[in-house]
Length: 264
Image 1 (cartoon, rainbow, N blue to C red):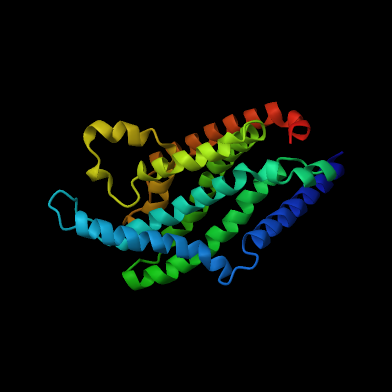
Image 2 (cartoon, rainbow, N blue to C red):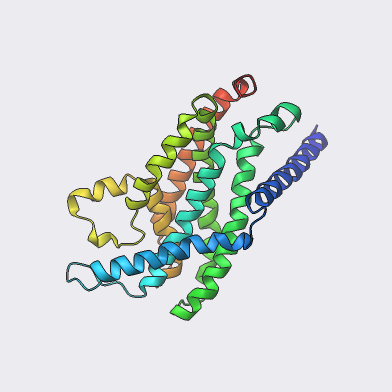
């Protein structure tokens, strides 16, 4: 029995690799610049926010002082686009793979999971370019940057929970994908990415802190931007959020998965 389980585990890893490879190839098929789009998008947002905030806020006495603003905003943007890209791609992963699901005996869980893996590959490429470019803006290379590994792992678990939840509902209600695309910009502006937390009025801070993405963006940014490592309490907070979100997503997915094939 143990040997059979090992064989199944190896087979599933191979399947995840194959599905992830397919996702990457399809995403950049016929693209001139390919993987570099993963960095061009945050770069475009960075340029827009630099122009807007430097003109409207950075010269204003009401805007809190920010050192190394480009590093501050870029570190937040790369984590945001990881979250945005993986959730947008994965919501339709079950419906979009209906042909494979019906013809191949592969656990359905591997389809949304492969979206995480393929986006992690894109994130790694974006991160490499980010670190190279940010060198010119004074980023400090140090061993603390290795904390990006557990941070990304926690964020991936959180994202997987959201993906399992949304992709399961999307099988039955196709409006879920449209709804997510509609509310995502609101989540973006509710997350202090282009602006510091000090700019948020006191009466709205509770709303911002009810946004779980806020904690992961803050954790990831602090690894690159803050002079010291994130405190243990911050790691624990993100771990709790990630585990809770994953449990919710897994419960919904397991509850509905037996109806997927008959519905899609």
